[in-house]
Amino acid sequence: MSKEEWVASRDTSREMSQESSFETSCESSLEISHESPFEISHETSHATTHELSDATTHERSRETTRERSHERSHEQSPASSRKRSQSPTRVRRQGMFRVLEKRLYHEQLFALTLTYPPSMDAIMDALQPGAFVHILPSPSESRQLFLRRPLSIAGLDREKRTVLLIVRVVGQGTEQLREVQPGTVLDVYVPYTHGFPIHNVKNGARALLVGGGVGVAPLLWLAETLHAQGARVTALIGFRESRDVFGLRTFEQWGDVHLVTEDGLSGKPGRVTEYVRDFSYDVLLSCGPEPMLKALAHITAGDSRPHYASLEARMACASGVCRACVVAVRSDVHADTGHHMVSTDDAARIQHRRVCHDGPVFSLSELVWRAP
Ligand SMILES: Cc1cc2nc3c(=O)[nH]c(=O)nc-3n(C[C@H](O)[C@H](O)[C@H](O)COP(=O)(O)OP(=O)(O)OC[C@H]3O[C@@H](n4cnc5c(N)ncnc54)[C@H](O)[C@@H]3O)c2cc1C
Ligand code: FES
Image 1 (cartoon, helix red, strand yellow):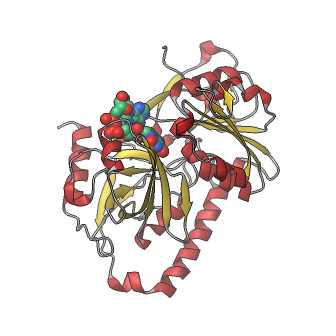
Image 2 (tube, rainbow, N blue to C red):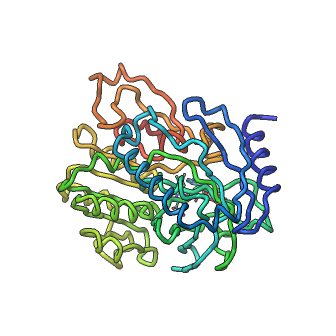
């Protein structure tokens, strides 16, 4: 059995042994050493009635966790720097999330609001914009698909314990997810990822957020977070068709928003990358399809300001083990600043990074793009 198969079968057998009940589910928690990602141990822990009902104790520990995670986000080396500081160990990463609301924009695009159990507070508190969930698209009682699907967190309300996902239907998994109804319980794994390096965006800094298509989703939470820490947020978002447009009102709450559509029916006509040069900024943060990110990398090449991109990749384990999601990066580029440490291309050495574990956010200038 290959390593990938082993990981997947281990995952499935663990899930099969779970109870599907939301409140009393007996979930396993993965304890992962980020220093040696191949060492994974399982720990079965039971969410007891006492644990769920002792609200006072829970709220106190929730505050402590939040303070710790706040400290961690400030102390932490930048999102894409390769050395992790203390990641939460013995933290439950998998839980049953209940669908609260589904909103269909059209047949191929929808939003889901899910609520998570208190047992997931520690991991959810530690997440930063750019984080994603790894979700089994079909309800727990009718598991049809073997592999989970990665979806960015578009909004996180820690008080209400809700996450917002915005999903584009492209295949079987996202199609199944579109069929879920409020009340459905979904099995969700939450990887501990390197999100956007928000601690590098100083108070008053001009942050340009560039998004394309469903890649706009993680920028919604990012805009809110950057605004809260005093950055001046401008969102430049592009969609292929006007009917795909989402998030305008949310961005308007946190800063300026500029819309571009390829069909030209809303906003300016064309592609977002055609307008990037019209904006002044101190830091650029982006998410979108590969051609968009590639064009951005081309436009910003040689620019010493920091530029970041959140990548999509096909994933299997989303915990750094199977290497299904690797991308090539230049080892002579400083992962945080994007500055070249050696001056010639010849000296560049190519390394591989796992999008699920080392990303999904990378410095734009460190990425090595495949030839078309
Ligand atoms: C970190 C991360 C965050 C993501 N966030 C979102 C999000 O917020 N909303 C959203 O709608 N999608 C997001 N995606 C993409 C989403 O995971 C895929 O569209 C989904 O897994 C496809 O599953 P499927 O079973 O519907 O399609 P499949 O049947 O698996 O594939 C259908 C088609 O989509 C392509 N495809 C599948 N997965 C990917 C992928 N990961 N990247 C590029 N092409 C793919 C396949 O090549 C194929 O052509 C994200 C991906 C990653 C890695
Ligand atoms: S999906 Fe397995 S290492 Fe990233």
